Structures are given as structure tokens and as C-alpha cells.
Length: 209
Image 1 (tube, one colour):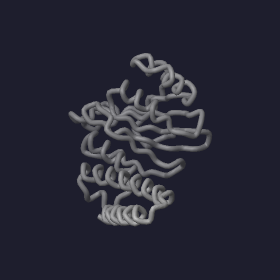
Image 2 (tube, rainbow, N blue to C red; image 1 turned 90 degrees about the vertical axis):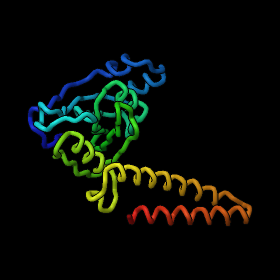
Image 3 (tube, helix red, strand yellow; image 1 turned 60 degrees about the vertical axis):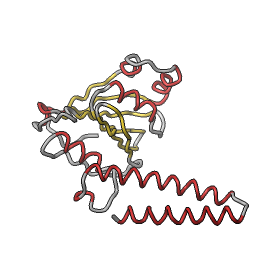
Image 4 (cartoon, rainbow, N blue to C red; image 1 turned 180 degrees about the horizontal axis):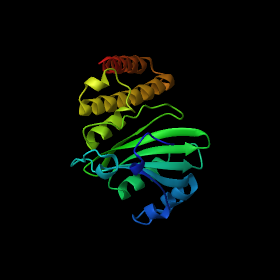
């Protein structure tokens, strides 16, 4: 996967998997996950002041782009946590499985992973690598994963919070719908349907904001 970035930003360096799991203490099960699920990790790009000519900030000093070739069509989220724990920078992931492509990014604050965002397989995302500083570029990359109306006019933190609430509501709605299907008592089913309607209404309002 090639991005339209300055030549100086291209690293294209293979990183041995054991470089990650030998630097932090992990279980044998997680180490095996590294081996079984990941074919190859390539450090593709380094976005830094000296490579793309855009100023770093206190929050974002560098952004790395890692290309991960997978042995199966499944994002190894537990493995990503180890990589993010080892690398003290924000990371944009490119996942490759055969002819399929997916993207992921870490929401990091104070070198602590707060959240992950992933695209669907073969979903086209429009990444914006421009900005007044690296923090702005990082925000733009995360916003590419978030589907909200008028997001360009919104404050970044509010976008993240609204998206977080939407995902919570979607999970709660799915869970309630499954409960309603299994519920046999009429009174409980009525209460659950009422709760379901409230959550769906809240979700619609958030999506329309």
C-alpha cells in the first residue's frame, strides 16, 4: 500500500515479530498469536518534522504507518495492544490478507491507548495528510474512520465522544434485540421494547447531530 507522502517519509523496513513480544512480558498464548496470525510487519512510513516538514507537538511527535500481512482474514487486536505498548508513537495500520485491505488506527493520549478504529475490509478511506502540525494530521486520520454528518465543522473531542456513544448504543440495541427474541414473559418483553425504542431514538438523534 503506497501513500502520497514525501520520499523522505518512506522507511519500508521489515521488523521481526520477536522485536515486539520480547520487549514486554506476554503470555505464551499471546506470543503464539503473534506467530500464528501475522506473516510480516513492515514499517512503511515515518511522519515526523524531519521527514514531511510539518511541526511536531507535545501530544504527537511522530506518526508511524505499519503494514501488517496477515495469515488469516481477522484483525489480531490483542497483538496490536502489544505493538502499541512497545512503540511510543501514534500508529496507522494497514492490514493485508491476500488481495484484501483494511485499515486501523490507535487513539493514543499520553502514550496510553484509549481506543481503536478499524475500517471494513476493502473499504476506501480518504486519508488527509495535511495540517498545521502533526497533531492535526493525526486528528484527520482518526476522523477518516468516523462516519458523522458535518464532522469537519465539529470539535475533534466531541466527534470522538459522539462516536463512542454511538458504538455503545449500537451494542446495547443488538443485545436488547437478542433478549427480546428469547424473552417469554409478556411484561418483561414490553419493558425491553420500551427501552429498545428509547435507545433507538437516542441513536437517531446522535446520527442526525
